[in-house]
Image (cartoon, rainbow, N blue to C red; front, side, top):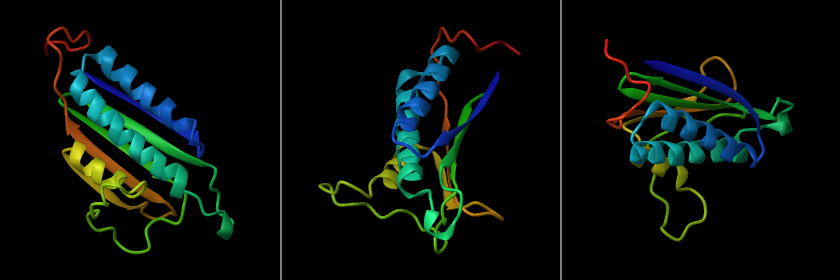
Length: 150
């Protein structure tokens, strides 16, 4: 079974819970284990919040009003990609450094690293913008309605 969807969202705080609810609804309907769904939804929330906060570059006349979220559930894996239209990273992005525990900002990429199995953080090849993609191996409920025998 494969499911994929893609959203083109405005860079507004209200778009973040929309993407999260769509992901959670998709996973619940497909029969993904709730703990895995929760981890992925938190990682998605952090990636979207970063796109909303950092994903625009109006100062240089670039389109900065939107970002894209794409999710693929394919067999045993889920891949999520969040792409913005901002300036991207000034240099190749290293692994995120842990923020102080009392910091209000700077923990999102670290959380994504902790919650996902594989993470790629970088610039959108050939265009402006940053790309955060992450994968997680899925676990399924025993009664998963969309799992079919091959």
